[in-house]
Amino acid sequence: MSALTVYPDNQSKLGETFTEFSAIQNRLNSIGVQFERWTANCALAADADQDTVLAAYSDSIERLKQQYAFQSVDVISLNPDHPDKAAFRQKFLSEHIHADFEVRFFIEGRGLFYLHVDDKVYAVLCEQGDLISVPANTTHWFDMGKNPKFKCIRLFTTPDGWVADFTGSDIAKSFPTLDQYLADDCTDAGGRAMQEQLPSCHD
Image (tube, rainbow, N blue to C red):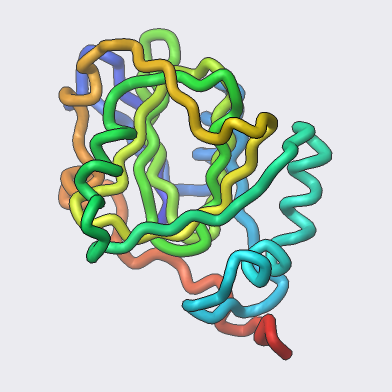
């Protein structure tokens, strides 16, 4: 289940958690963050290639591309057996900003975004089927957990891809990691089965 916890930026023990989609969406919209749920137009196999994945979500992708003039789209994934998983995790854990949107749609798995806006920190647990679009220059960090397992669609308005400017703050160390957030029972760990009743993408 997706979740949003809103903290004072100096009190990581005093968060208020929301798990209803409309409540999460409304709170995030108030800070300019787009949060949606997408459904594939067919059931994807676990080993589906990038073209098949993008075709399964083509309607939603095209709408977002038209809305924000995104120029490129790709699919990334990371599994617990990846030899560089710790290095990849560390790369995103420090507070940073981007000159471009940070857009992620979770085809599989989960991740925890932290958005630092004014005097609040918004922890957004994204699960399978969730789309989050973080505006340019929004201070944030991301935790994929000790044993990451996710597959995501990314969209960019520039050809440079993921480029970060780090703030130098250590604020991220004061807030729960993904594993701690889940262990604190902020949400259940079940996720959602989004595609069971859909026709196969290869039909």
